[in-house]
Image (cartoon, rainbow, N blue to C red; front, side):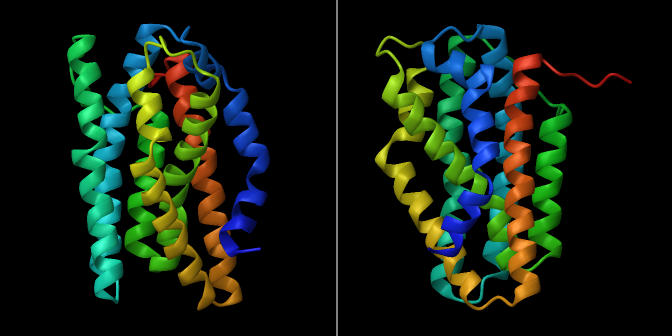
Length: 216
């Protein structure tokens, strides 16, 4: 069993909670209300900007040209590829870009930026991995069951597609490589970083589903 296999096994209850969440089940059957999806897209656009920054921080700290190039390409894709999907929905729903991060987005992005700048590159890699891996698994799960006429088909096809699949496999290989040279303490910190980000994935979708706003 690889280190990343162990990570996934560890967060299996979190992943199951994500699959059972109303946001995911309603996205899958096409019944997710448009305002809920619009909230999600607005917050996801803000998230991806900082996700790209976090990946760029890992690129700057990489010690080999191959790793530096991989993280740089991940950062570029977060802006160029995934934001293109957002622009499609921004135009379709006439959505105004949001400038304020709601609680889950704020917590998640600040956690990633802090971890990738203050912790080792191995811990930073573990922290960004759930955004790759969980989205691929959720995308493939939804793709298997969603009807073709689903209004969120573009989103589904993006995260279930081959291009994203290759990026996830590349990120998994990087994380396993870093784990091979990590000591016991760093390995546990990698596990914790992966768990925290996985929980924040659930909260991100939950904020959209409940239309969470700052209360005070």
